[in-house]
Length: 570
Ligand code: VG1
Ligand code: CO
Image (tube, rainbow, N blue to C red; front, side, top):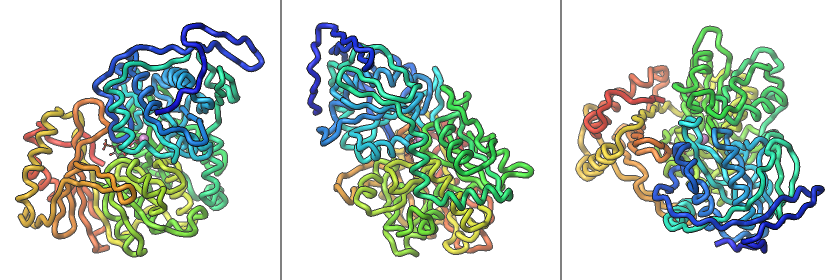
């Protein structure tokens, strides 16, 4: 529990008129409230419809519970606040700021215009040794008044709060009776600089410059600049009207010399231009059409609402995030920030095992964790891994404690500059050396929650009887309900997805999403290994078709969900 150090009277409105120091009124109100029953954080923070967050006391309750649950501040009392710019971002920031001051924070940093990408937040927390960062984002979920809003909170190591803390916040949210709020005017979020409120110093900071400076230490900007300057290399980056626009323009166009029209949809908008800010083949269609159309650029990339995801495209080529992670692992020692090489890697359980093969070849450990970046934090802090990733368009390294969209793009640019080869050639060589993992994820979105739970229960009920059984050419070798024991703190996370492993190394995984805001989303992950280079140019969905049929047979997807086909295939 944090100690409240403020000495302000709770009943009188004290005003200290000192225009030189920007001191505002400073009356702290203790506001009575009652719990909401649905404030359980999911895979990454609390995500709900905007109108749920707009209910009186809803955001305030949750934020008070975060403050009440934070560990005692060590030497520092810094809080950082920023969001992905979605609808309700600015209003939420003003509320959280006033609550932070009322809860005793003496130093609050806020991203200019209220914007901070998730990876930039992680970097800022580490740079300023902050106690906590609050990110207003529902990531890749759509925004706008009818869309989604979310609150993620990161700890002093820069990473998402671990499960122990998210559970504690939920428990506090179930019994909360009161929150604290400072009465004062809204502050200007657009002008860089400092203001003083009560005893607290509020700084509006330029995270774009900070983040770009940081990236410059990790990659060979000279080599990438030369690549653009050669005139033989063109790329497009789709910021999807979300938070990475300003960061991408600074990095790609200003610092690296890419053409002025490289960054598409570069202005963050409250509703992301009406789309899903989700960098995949379905939602980043403007970029996909260019890369798969006539006369495509050499390289394409996109990131999501809060900038932690990335999609990598070559000419007429989609690089699966799992393959991207494996390529990174195999090449990381060539990059300036990583000359000492890999100490180990980690991937989320449903991510393909392409990276496992690289780790094996390099003789380093490969850890398999549950879905969600919070599970990488301990491994990174303990220096067990250098690199980690998820199939859901996430990759990152020990430079911060979040996945990092633009970092991944710079990684690929640096690699292309070094190898002087197109993306397709880099992939072909990689598969030739390690074999190819054909991989796809099928999502069934917004299905009835009870039906989705029944489907999972139906699958769980069969786990004991399936090993050894044959499905066409595929013999089931092993299946389980994935349970993870953290190698560092030994904490246990159960029910992290159902995995079915076949004798030839193929795999099917089923799990329910923890980020959706309407009904349930069933995710089916399919993977088949192909060592033969003659068979590395097959159509992914066709080659996975037998496994798709087995998934249907095992889970009776149509029976439970009444869906003929998935809503999104990546
Ligand atoms: C999804 C992804 C998961 C990712 C999470 C947060 O979770 O599958 O890999 O860590 O989103 O990403 P789920 O529970 O819906 O499968 V982000 O970009 O929303 O912070
Ligand atoms: Co995200």
